[in-house]
Image 1 (cartoon, helix red, strand yellow):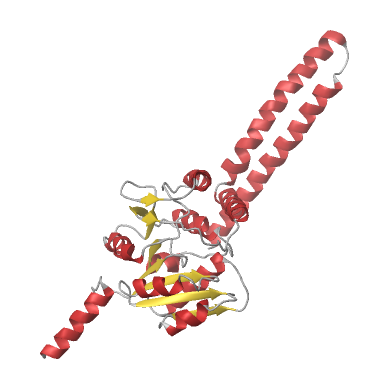
Image 2: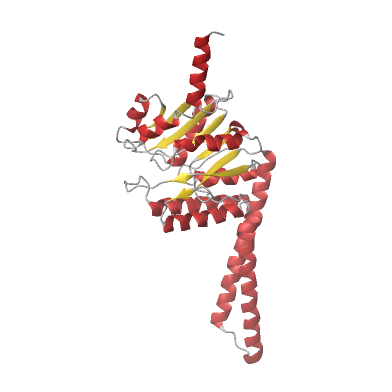
Length: 313
């Protein structure tokens, strides 16, 4: 091999930063991020082989800037949501035969220089998904307290679904090709982050975390924090109810029936002593019984349906 060819190969290795004959693709969902998208693309290209951007119905120059910088741009004619953007990006990345896919935000919160940290952990071969956590030792975040509190609530719920992580809402992640091919994703909004983790646990995929740094600026956010939080919470609860119906509905149902039993005993004691029925106490007992029976019935029916669907899958 001539000297020129060797120089070319070395230059390519320096650009990719990770080499080893694996195709690494960065996937960036973007909505009205013309202010930051250029720097994210330029920095990410130092560590990956290809950059994909999903322009999710932007009304500014986000898509044009990304395309001008050499990124492959997927365009949504209207805003469909974070989840829909990632699904489009994953589909395109798999079509390009990506070995590893890294997702990061387009607003500058994530540092593309930390991409190798996630991919190298994935290369170890014992995990399928790597999450960049701002809460691990060695990581850091300038997130306000209320954001941290919300993340902790969602992370706690995800832990009940079988995924023990510290930062379930991090969008800075790396996926193996096997992981993306194993997951059937449906969420359109921000809830896709938790859907991925819960379905990864159900599919037997291994999840790990590495520390990252997340920065926040004073620029306008494209997501309302209240709507964002409620959407993620409802999505998490929905998938938990599907994954573990006996736990999700059965335990509250059993508690309601136990509560009802106390009030039925109280009602009977009053009747035995006075030969009168306390209407208020009896109504509480009846209401709790109704709720308990409905929850227990729902848990059993949903458990049977989910079991049948999984057996046929």
